[in-house]
Length: 140
Image (cartoon, rainbow, N blue to C red; front, side, top):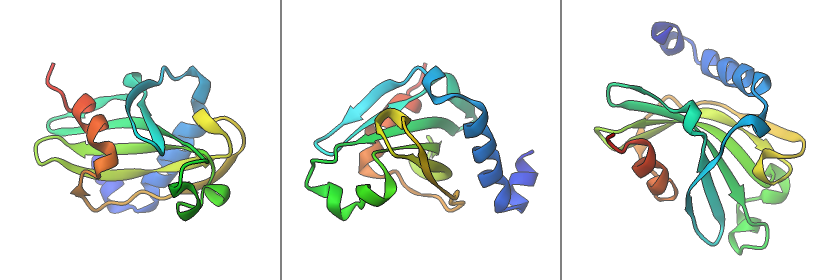
């Protein structure tokens, strides 16, 4: 499976789209992991998977349309929330997106607006995911 995902750029997007289409969003038990004046970030603990140092989890980000960042972030075009398949290298403190989907309403409610593709490159964990990283990569 891992080889298949590495050899095809379309596979992660197809996999994510299939996963999002099959699992009802409302069935997820979203756990708040961080918030600031612009967004609240939740994870679905049931989606957390660990393989060595690599962790993956479904993350829901809810945005405040009244926040100053809303206009520059183009929330009116994108939507008020998104669910992203997040991959974290817990040993190297790196992040990679498995792709995601934007929703018109908060908490992934309302019409799905658009999907965005996976990014295979790893980068530093963005500051808005610091709380997510701490929760997902915490040693049990």
